[in-house]
Length: 259
Image (cartoon, rainbow, N blue to C red; front, side, top):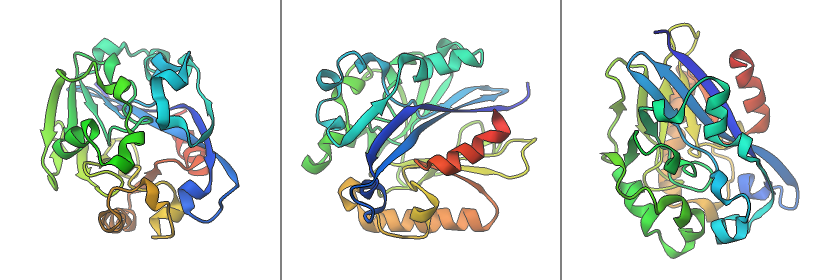
């Protein structure tokens, strides 16, 4: 079976751009909510699950304080991961592994849709999501998590690099800072000219990658965030194609090869 790579966006959020760069406050910015499916000879892997469709009918009741900073949420049920997978012929029940960068509202929302999968997540992230620091509690949605407590978790240690299938195709890289257990995913496709780094929220945009200002209010640990940026800059410098967490221009350019 040939490896195939499917990038999706779970709709978009519109936020104050200052949240992303700590400079352009008052300017509104629409950004993608990336999520991915990778077909591999040994299984189908999802990296991040996007926004949860279950709360769309009554967002305030489901997401609570987690959406108070959004100007708008531009998401339909058809944008969410189960429907997006259907468009490329994948039944959610076929997904064997779900790799989570972290467990925030826009990255782990659809966990409940994959009860038979093995979840690859940092142990530090899993415990923090259930009991975060007071200033971070708005970033995790209890309604997204509460049905997943007894799922099949493979909990990775801090700093551990994890090769999902043992062949170098998919490797989890610990990139803490945004959250304690944040991880990015290195992807090597046989027919793609460069290895790819799916950064998630370890790096929002190319501007972020250069160590420019960012909103400290969304960071668990600023020192760790900078260390992770340094590591990601290294991967860029040795030839990796960087897939940033929430950059619309870069996202639009990157998906052209996989449309």
